[in-house]
Every structure is written in structure tokens, then in C-alpha cells.
Length: 281
Ligand SMILES: Nc1nc2c(ncn2[C@@H]2O[C@H](COP(=O)(O)OP(=O)(O)OP(=O)(O)O)[C@@H](O)[C@H]2O)c(=O)[nH]1
Ligand SMILES: [Mg+2]
Image 1 (cartoon, rainbow, N blue to C red):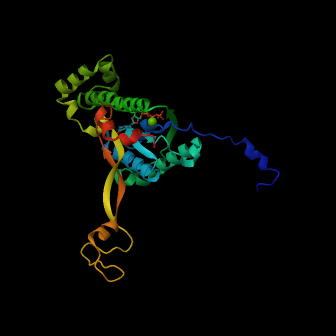
Image 2 (cartoon, helix red, strand yellow):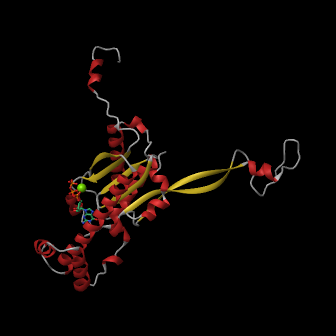
Image 3 (tube, rainbow, N blue to C red):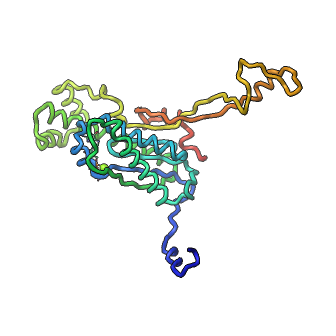
């Protein structure tokens, strides 16, 4: 009812465009997952099933939002990078943030039983979300380096902490006290000398987090009603088609799939091999 006397209230709805030409990073984070993980008996320090469920939800988001070029997940959080020129929803912040966050959440709930089949979901999980804009490729790289370094720091701490508690018989208070003031090399040493654990041999998923990227798959696709390769091809005049005619009926199509990795994204190798992620288009 655009013409009603009430329509003026629309004027209170303010535009919220995100600055063009900048990199959007949308990060979701599980709300009160300390409690959720306790209530649902997640394994400590890492529950692979729960992490796979996070990866599944993130993949669903990437399949829906093609402007997302990279995602990184650890623990109860996931970061999504949109290509610099993304123009979805006219870059309206609330629209993008709420749609992505709710899709992630509904996928997490929808797929819960596939990963935690013996653990009924007791209540509704939720995720918070934020979008931060970054002005340059180098800051985007530093952002993702920050998250992966965080994964390492948290995982090392949690791995030693729960070894001290679950295998070493310490109380949680004692374990915190044991670790207070220790540096990385001392944590490695405690793990190895007391529990025989070589940190670097733990699963890469736990040490590096999850990386989702689009990889190109090149297919030669038959177009229209083009005959199969082993079928005879003839022209409208009944003449046999030339080899070049056959080629003309095949058009290369570049398809992408979303692939999951658990490798380093701090060094140059990943970015050199995926230069499209930080490209302008
Ligand atoms: N046992 C276990 N706990 C996990 C796992 N992944 C995440 N968590 C829990 O989730 C928490 C995530 O940290 P935060 O996001 O800082 O804590 P939070 O309770 O979610 O708090 P808010 O995000 O502020 O709502 C961790 O501290 C763990 O308690 C897991 O694989 N196993
Ligand atoms: Mg959280």
C-alpha cells in the first residue's frame, strides 16, 4: 500500500550499503558453544564430527553464494571472503549478513544428525555474524593468517590442557596453572615427554583448520543435440561433416567445485596457486 498515509514509516529504514571495491569478510561464530559442546558431549579438545558439520554448513553457504571465493573454519567459527567486486543484494549489509548467517545456522541444524547421529540436538543452536571490510589484498591475507595462527595457538593449548586433565589426572584449575606462562616449545615438550604425543603428527584438520576454495574443473561439453563421438555426423546436405565441424559442436565449459583442505594459508604457496581469490573481478 505505497500510497497509504502510513507509507511514510518506510523513511525510517536507512540504507546500509557496504563500501564498493572492498573485500567483505563475513564471520559467523557459534553462540555459547562452550555450553553447546558440553551439553552434547563433544569430544575434547576436538570433535571431528562437529567440525565436519561446520564444514558441511559452510559448503552449503558457498554453493548458494557464488561470490564467496574462500572460507576458513576453526572451532565454532567460519570466515567467508567475497570477491572484491561482489554486488549481491546491492551490497546491503543487513541483507547479506542475515541471509548467510541464517543459511549457515539452518544447515547446521538440518545436517546435525548426519554427523552426530547418536546425540539428539537438545535445543536450538545459533550463530552471531559480522561483516568487516578490508581495503587491500595484503590485509585480507593478514586476516586469514590471523585466524589460522589463532587455530594453532588454541589447538596447541587445548591439546596440552586436555592431556593434562584426561590423561594426567589434573583438575582443570591445576592444568591451567601448569600451562600459565609456558611458551610454545614448552607445550610441545610437555605433550611429548609426558604423553608421548608429537603435536606435528596430530590431524591437519585440528592444527590448520578447514579451507574451502573453488577449484576449476574443465569439461568438454556437447552442445545442443550434437551426436556422441561414436555416432556418425552428417551435414544438412547429407555430406559427412568435417573434423572441424565436429569440434565446433563442442564447447569447453569451466565448472567449479568447492574443495575442502586442511593446509597452510599463511605462506605464499596457497595464494600463488589461487591468485583468482584476490583478483579484482
Ligand atoms: N569439546 C569441544 N568443544 C568445542 C569444540 N569446538 C568448539 N568448542 C567449544 O566452543 C567454544 C568456542 O569458543 P567461543 O566462541 O570463544 O565461546 P562461546 O561459548 O561460543 O562464546 P560466544 O561465542 O561468545 O557466544 C570453545 O571454547 C569450546 O568450549 C570441539 O570440537 N570440542
Ligand atoms: Mg562462539
